Image 1: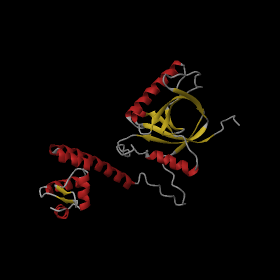
Image 2 (image 1 turned 45 degrees about the vertical axis):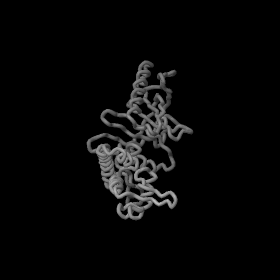
Image 3 (image 1 turned 135 degrees about the vertical axis):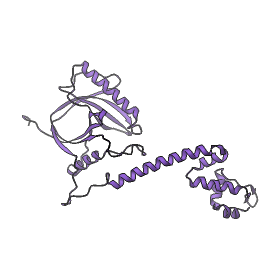
Image 4 (image 1 turned 120 degrees about the vertical axis):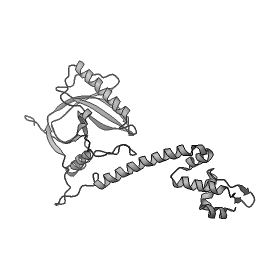
Length: 294
């Protein structure tokens, strides 16, 4: 059969036939080297039809080539592909529901034309807070992975032990904060901090970690209280790039941007009760002068 006849019989264009020939899926039965005519055997129509079916099902060219080379692998490859399609369909359905619910849509403006203020955002005044912490570097492609969380938990345990040995008492729940690493766009530093009832002990050491200390000044904080529950927003943690930012974090940033445009706030994730899924997200809005200060 000529290329034209074979194309009409199979529904594959001459361009597609040449592509599958080059990729090793469907070579002509005969090629006349001088006029470069290609001819196909009638029995190859079945192969062409199978290629069309498998490609229409979404299998890759490499997968189709493997099936043609090893027909016994067809069932297992189809089962694996069907499972992947179901996973992707589930993710797409959840993303569609999330988009339709408007959770991540831009907030509607108020009647006066100003931006709508998110409901869960609140403010509080906090006194000076001495703290001590350790620093961990995290590659962005590792952020959120279980191993990263385990390393953070181990570092916190070592920090608490070092503080106890130094006679320094925590003054509240610990927090974490991210900060960029100069010259390393794909790496961030995580500060794991513990608020203290007094100044950080001099010479504090935590084996294998960089120790940092400081004092947050008296300040006004803007914060949201985040609690995990059964009705919590689906953050699509199985989506490419990992889970979405929590809606309450977006509300916090919307409120911050509305009144403090151009600022770059440090977001502190305060671990109120992490095992129960209870955290606070806080940023400093402004520093305040305390009583007796000028």
